[in-house]
Amino acid sequence: MKKVLSFAVVAALFSVAVSCSHDNYVDTTGTLLAQQKIVIDSFVNANQLPLVPDTVSGATNVVFNLQLGDTSRHITNDSSVVSFTLNGVLLNNQVFSAPDSIIKFNFINPSQNNSVTANNLVFSSNSILYYYLTKIGVGGHVTLITPSVWQYGASALAIGNVTIPANSPVYLDLHVVDISKP
Image (tube, rainbow, N blue to C red; front, side):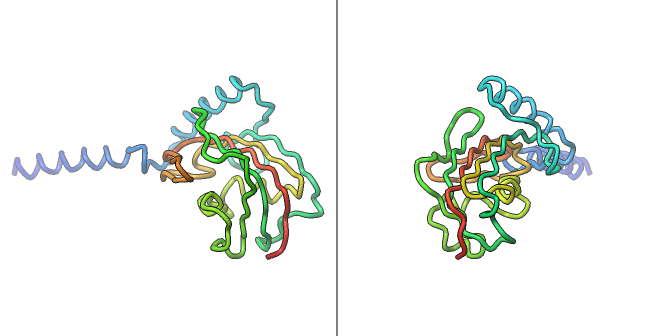
């Protein structure tokens, strides 16, 4: 009986340790979100970024700056190919996407995207970057810092030679170059 009980205690402790692992931790209490807000606020202040809290999308702890561009040429009901540049930076200043080339993202047929970066950006309808992208047109620009829950989540994501660690807030600076039909 003691061996069974000891095994159960060890198994319970192991499962708690695994479930709290940084790589797979899904924040259901808001603790991680609160911790990331402190990191985000520090990054904004240290870099003197002119970003304001998002009070519209419902995404907690996102800060952003939005320039609309030509809103007559914008994404329509996921039927567009968007060409953009993206500066993506972890909050430790490690760059995972440099704005030195144009990335194309095909919302209808992602297999036609022109780079690994585009395929790994996770432009889904629940992505905060997707949300802002649907608000701007050609020439538009969005700068945002988002907690992990609103963009990449609880799984690590490899983009080029850099891996975005699980549960990492990120700085994203996106400029829309063109929007066209596939």
